[in-house]
Length: 198
Image 1 (cartoon, one colour):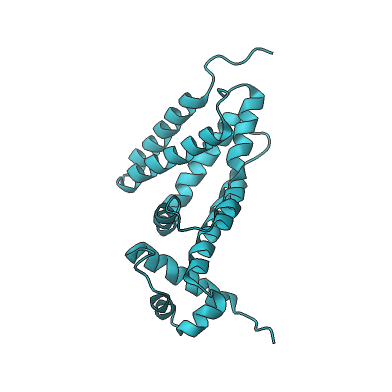
Image 2 (cartoon, helix red, strand yellow):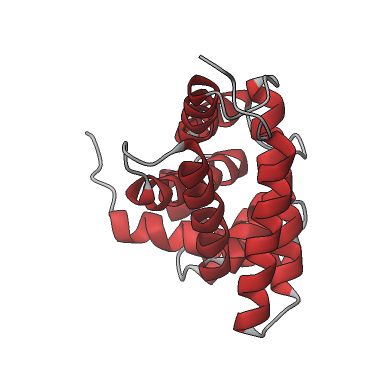
């Protein structure tokens, strides 16, 4: 018999995992603690997530999907490459500021080897807009011909660097200034200063 699983319980387990993974670290958080935080028995948790790895992976995928959905809502085909990068930049930082626990979790697991290969590949697909923006810039002739992976990686690392500064700054005007200056530094690094002649 196939058991119908309650989506609210599933969400409660993911929320509990996020809170505990951020507070204690993934390695120091047991599935029993997650079940207790969610107000359920460990056996119930295993119906939804048979292993702790399943929780770690699904949480990363959920965050990637939610962030991607928000950023994609900001992108329009008529935007220039610079405007597209600016929307991705601002959208990423604003989303992380609104979801600080998600940011801390992703920083903990992203390059740690904790995520399964399947999840890394699937979450990368959520961020296809990075590569669409790069291809748009190359087609417009406004980007230096750097490898796509390098530009995408530099964009992500620049977002992380500015996010860490924003987290330490509570003044909204200063946050806005850092957000703008950070994008200027990133954009100046990848743009062609002399457009390609047709």
